[in-house]
Image (cartoon, rainbow, N blue to C red; front, top):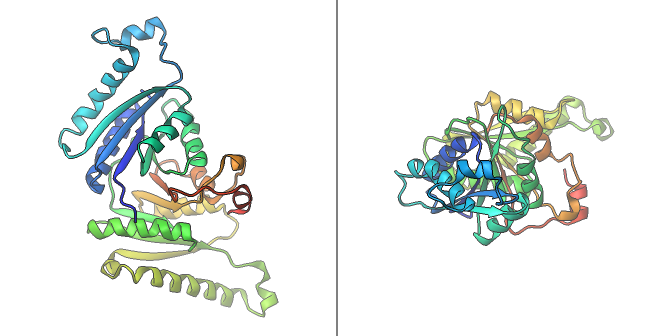
Length: 306
């Protein structure tokens, strides 16, 4: 696993920022993060005069005033973390473009974005960043309690979900209080009769296949035997996104993790992926979407992907 050394946190100067800074400090402590960037993007730093009066301090330019405002939140939260290098970026331009640009320049391993419930905002920016970028994104719901005891990893045994599980298990090796639930949702295909099998026997075979795959993965982490488990759920008519979120809540998840393929710019209109379905239903569990950092999926791959 590539260790998560460099985090970037998106801020928007709303009440969400306090939650984001608190959660970022918690993660920095848990993951032994080396460098953390807080970024705010204004479409224009030519701030209206009435707003500028409330922002300006000591006759500083607008960007410096915003940076100083952010540091009033960041400073106290990171006072006990002197080993973490913290930098505040205030940029002008299109948020998606600027955040992805600086994430690449700073070689970011993980991007934290807020997920609002009652506060003003649509959450569209975070989803655009996930769709267009090659970077892993952690969606932090409004007022999330910083806690990491129960982690649910949704796994379909693709290379992407196995990558996500491996990253979680490597973190769990260093954190003895973390319990990991591997959640596998499966369907019994309607064509089971053509194979001369009953519904029940095919269901049993599917569960056995998943159990064997899981045990093979876990052999690489024998010290975690008592802190990992496999949950198998059969998907009937319900939406896969809703099913995953319901099971994550049942497991009292502090974090829900999935692995996702990258997307190229040409594939932006492709919807209906498992990732998007989970995003649609998950409003209050922090959701970590791992991507392969250097991958760029082609249009046809994106079109055919689940």
